[in-house]
Length: 181
Image (cartoon, rainbow, N blue to C red; front, side, top):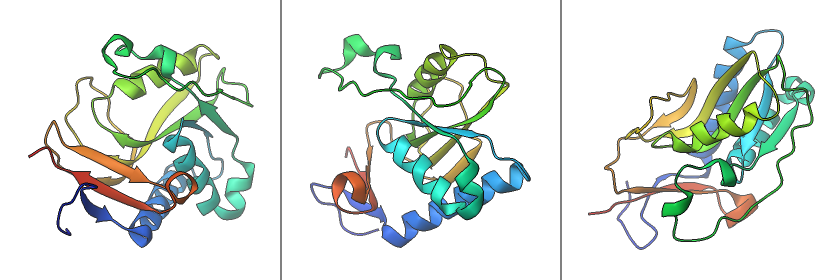
């Protein structure tokens, strides 16, 4: 780990992040030989994770339906947030009813984001199965939600932050730990 600064300590660089995406793709194809489930990315960086995993699947990924989900109005902590949410369009281009779906996010922390995503997804229908894929599992759950596919598990303190940067949004690929202490 490099020295901490205002941006935190970089824990994963571009190559590391690429390897984590490949790991997620391999885990998914191992568990779903033959036919891959539909993907749903949580705005914003969960969508990027889903897109990158889909690309990492190569030819197989071409057949994967990809949807996007904004969970802003499904959150149970809307009253506690300091800023107003930036609402983005949800787009689910496939039939949710009876579908197997993998929900993608960048970091799994308390579980509240995923609970909100499940609530939002259920408004489109009742999937036969919902799985969860994340780049980083940082622990400290408040709700009993566990990922099915994990790029990396990192032990953090409750007040620490994980900053995920993707070139599409931030001009670089990296993951940093911003320590509260």
